Image (cartoon, rainbow, N blue to C red):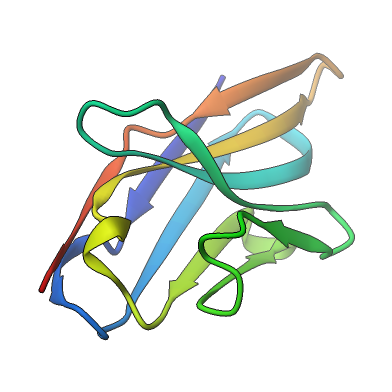
Length: 120
């Protein structure tokens, strides 16, 4: 079992910044990729950013240059630094991880989501 706890969401004005955190705990042997997705009302969930175990990140075109994904492997935690926020960034943000458990089972886990609201 793996639990993901997200934090850092909130309401900001356009141009502001937020930092999301996702802490994983449980029967973890290793975490491979960690990612942030988002889902706006009436839209499909979309991939925002993803970071591999080696620290290489990739981003959706809509957030390149504004968002930065990072991770602390010692803490099993991923971060998403969001700068220059726009109203179109408003969504529920979800953490997603690829985990290898202590029994060497591999699975994918989702967080509960955290709301980000950007006002104009």
